[in-house]
Amino acid sequence: METQTQNGPDWFSKIFRLAMGWKIIYGIGKIILGLAILKWATIDPSSLFYKLMGHEIIEDPDDILIRLVEPLLTHLSVGTTTFAASYLIFWGLVDDIFLSINILRDRLWAFSAALALFGLFISYEIYRFFHTHSFFLLFIVAIDIGIVWLIAVEYRKAKNRIHETK
Image (cartoon, helix red, strand yellow):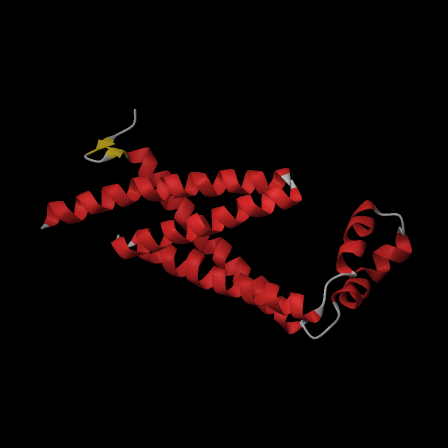
């Protein structure tokens, strides 16, 4: 049987804390990936791909993954790679780690900042969807909307907790 707290079911808070913990781990992964990309940012992406996947290409030149990724990499420049790395590092630090930690500490400004950032990002994702028609992107939008809902509900709870202690 679920225990009921003053502000709703205990399981909801557990799911929320789990989601924030996941965002922190995800943010660390983004930073690591961004740093790894920066390390190789001066190398042409297609050259790096051939260097890393050379043995696979020799072994199975008709591999479906190689055939899918290869054309994408020929259009990437070093500038695009640097931008992608910077994007991953910035969003990993700011959104995923910094804001998630401050949300878990019930800092009301962090809830507002996260909701605003998510709102902007979801708007951009929807804009991109209409250009790409990617159902994967639509799936990501649905997950982001779910996270916004979790943050909004916990924001209300945090405001109540803070007002009750005054």
